[in-house]
Amino acid sequence: MPVIRAALDGLRESDDVVLVEVKEPDQHVEVEKLGGSIIVDVDDAGETVHVSAPLRAISDTVEQLADADSKSL
Image 1 (cartoon, one colour):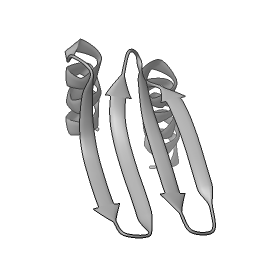
Image 2 (cartoon, helix red, strand yellow):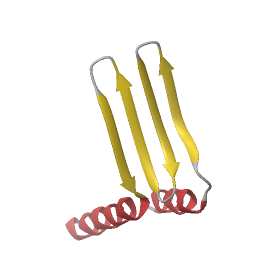
Image 3 (cartoon, one colour):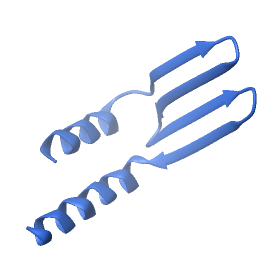
């Protein structure tokens, strides 16, 4: 989990940035850090998906998973 924690810390401190972008004739995928959130947008011929997750919520989830994993050992 230290690598995930470090990555999340780095994202929180970074400027807004597009992390991944895929453009095809019939689809567009973009993952970006915007403000304090990670945003995933997917547009293709049949669907449009928009997900926004606050980095704080992602960090809290990672910590809960780490705690649950340590208790199961």
